[in-house]
Length: 582
Image 1 (cartoon, rainbow, N blue to C red):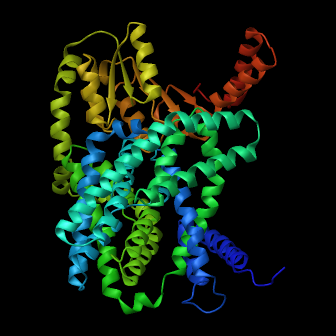
Image 2: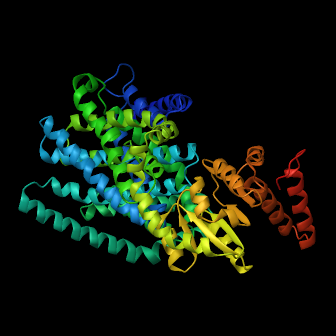
Image 3: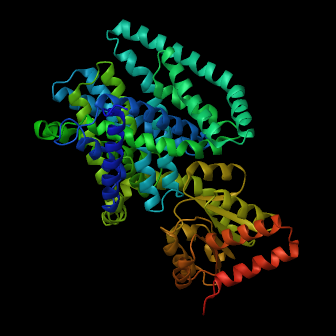
């Protein structure tokens, strides 16, 4: 067996360095991506010590790109986008145009060609899915209206990335007429590829996956997923498209099958492992001396990411009638660049549209912006408080939201003011809120929904029911909702960011109202009791009850025995000296 094994040594060095620096980054409360990129720098040709094989690493990175884009396609849900289409689509388009324009200006200012500046701007406009989701999760914002907007916005950016992956090779053809012809041919090939993949894959791929799943061999099932992803990604090259685009389409096709959840579970470890190698390979191409050689260029590009993009997002979100807090969450969450920027940059580099300096610039921007993003998220509440202390700025940011809200809310406020029927106020209109609202109406109680999604409120109003657009943690919104005469206030939101002030304000307005709250953890009980909640449904308790009931049902226990055991689990879990919440 030969001792010279560059593939094994490069993989071993990459994984070990990524593990060490990834753990360090996590302990410093940074994204592990920062550690993975620095691991690549450490074993790259521009730093002393061990030097990995960059060509082999780049080939492994190609697999990482395929699996990353396959995962994006697999988890792409059109309904998630349609839920916030009114803001996500125009918002992402406008912000991408602003970032592309700023990238063009930056490139021209430093002597780049217009095409290179446009490519730089397009790459800087794309945020990292991993970084955004981790930031939202760390601050309990995933299930909030602001989190839904940010995620929908990112879905649109992912779609734009797919489109740009088609446009970039055409840009490399050069010449106005030649470019138009090349772009037209590229789009025709793309349409043919999409048609072929979905027409053939709609029946063939699900049938293959189900047939393999029936063999009950996990290895064969995982191999099948990998084979489909790589085969369709490779076929995309024959149509003049990138492997990344083909992998995205493969993920969408697999996502339509009956075994998509298992496919996602099996593909995740592969994706994560090769994604690490992808970031390591990107880091290996980074020349640290670039920072000292081009500090002003780096500062300008970082300014586009950390200042230009957030300001554009704030202006768009606030202008489209959403609250200042939603605007801040979107702006801070997208103030970074990540994996898809590298994918775009790499494609552009291979087509001669982006120099090594440009690629180094993307890596440096990613290192800076991803490192700073957790700290930006931590500044969300202080920043909102600072803006509230400046009434003129706060009114400007919320003017469109208040104007739009007033127009939508006028009919509901008038109906609540003149009505005298028993009223229940439901905060949040997700799946839980919809179930509660339906049950209350079935038992003859008039309901009013408060939600921060303008489209949701408008749709409820069109159905002839009462709905109010606004943040229920604000006392004036609760008063407009008629809380003074309400018998129930049901808070269905799972997060606790603004729930405490909401319950306290509601108890102040109507001491006799029964306030029922949804909560995730039992440790939140004391806080809810202190602000005046009447009852709470704790998700971890109900999960214990549901799992216990399901297991007993499988064991053949009678319905009465299952109900008794469920009551026992609930009573024992909720038992606490002096507690009045149930």
